[in-house]
Image (cartoon, rainbow, N blue to C red; front, side):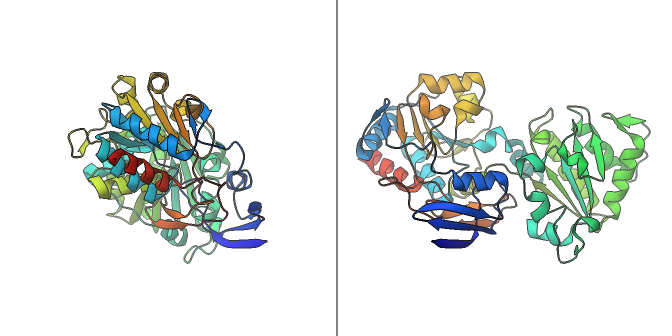
Length: 425
């Protein structure tokens, strides 16, 4: 029996690094400190596995599956490579290499979640810090358009509301928590102030807060369904905070306004920094979606939606993003890595994946693997393979290998290297 300490959880963007995992006879038998989702992922990682490589639903050896995958990508006119948010950075780097080699388009799941965040940050920049700084210093925390109690289960206790830090030794007693959302969520029971905003009204509310912070009088009785006195109270608390942090989620990025909402939030934080210290941090979902953006940026200059069809990287969200490429019927082959787009993308995009030869690299069976021509099982990063992942605040953390994968199953990076070698001939 082996006990691994300081294990990193490969589930969400929190990348909690204080887990204790017990392994017996190459099976995980106990997990401490993990949330319910994390514990389930570790204890049940071996269930619903892809047991052998498949081509047209028939078991084959790895060499034949790699050869078929390479042939599909080489013969395609407009291959799409998509996913990457639930694998480690080495595999992402290999993916970019492969996309350039076959003249394809490479996109990651940020294009359907925090893509608008990246667009806004490219335009205006950002005021940010580490989650450790929030834990140690923040006395005002605002959750806008997100619900960590359902999506990032340990965020409040480990990094924000409940956490005890260097200058916040009282934990929850030392902090004021506000939540802004279009509906009442579980977070209302935790928050000192819950602000219910009309759907699509985030931009107007952010603009009103900016006006008040800048010293302008707010004449309207309400903005986006929020009473004037609530706006004035929140703005005053923001200005008087010792250190404030706004965490935001898809309620801002995928509602009306999209990247304009984020630009308004960035502007609000910039205005607040004339009075105090304030930061803005996106609540990234998959454990390495931030790494997918980071690796793609350092290798191509762009964070997602990168086209190599002309032999050099081009970037154009809305044209080279996976949903648009598939919905228009342009993609004639697809390689899906550590993702399940058939279960999550819009109908037209998902249907296109069923119409074209699709390759899946994933440890588990999913809806996308069910319609794919080639399925190659891979080792689960952070459990059966080591590597690097980026936390939601941009901090790289090294994932650990705890157990051996099933016989013959390789990590994503090694499978991609085999495909690259086959493509090169």
